[in-house]
Image (cartoon, rainbow, N blue to C red):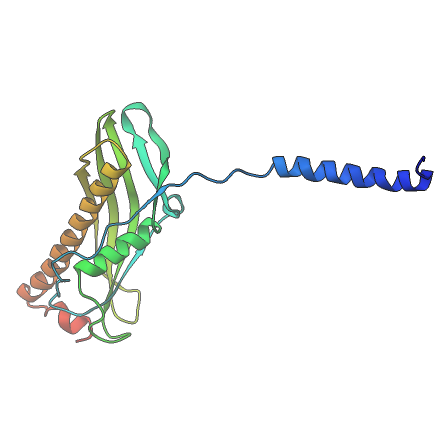
Length: 215
């Protein structure tokens, strides 16, 4: 028995809709492949060291090109100006957050309350694995540190740092280990610089930074 013309006209749009839905399903994005997530590991066996003056906080900021969890590298021997990123590896957080946590583990902060101590601001300029040859790379960290007076943005002192640690292997894991080593070096260099500022101020008869930083 033939179907009424009206029924056939209603079925046609339904068939077209079903076909469209099936086509849309085949165009859905594929599930992203799994990737490894890295950080610097847990705190080391050595506790944070205290300076001779109170330090309220350490803040690390980064430019837009470092504002992601991408694990970046450069092939300096091919095209030094090009930034690339590993496809199967990511950082657990943005570089500024990882570096800030590492520095707080290296230098004791928060000793003088919420507003009664100096602040340390670190501007991260570079954080990447640099390949000087196909099988030779290093973890490069470049930063500018500024020691600021309590309750104001007055700059007490500033200094630039450039550190590099050889990578044990020419892959993402080698870059993780190299950058972790460079950040550890940065923590030691910052502590040495701040401690030297305090000693120099006392030696010059202008008083230590302890009085200037609110203690």
